[in-house]
Amino acid sequence: MRDFLTSALTKLRLGNIPLIRRVIVAAVGGLVTLVGVALVFLPGPAVVVIPLGLAILATEFHWAKRWSEKGRRVFEKLKRRWASLRG
Image (cartoon, rainbow, N blue to C red):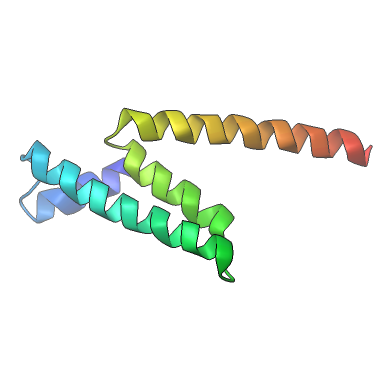
């Protein structure tokens, strides 16, 4: 994901400006995350969209990377628990 974002910003000649890059990542990642939160209440794949938004935000923000890693650990724990219940 980071390579795609870097190449897109380079094509727009914005790759050398860190502040603009952070603003663009924040806007796109925030929008995707907000759509994911809305999909919790609307029919849609919120379980897929919210982590995608966090992954976009994690390319630039350390707090989003921590949340993403914490979510991944919780998911793995639930997966192991589900597997143990199924036998």
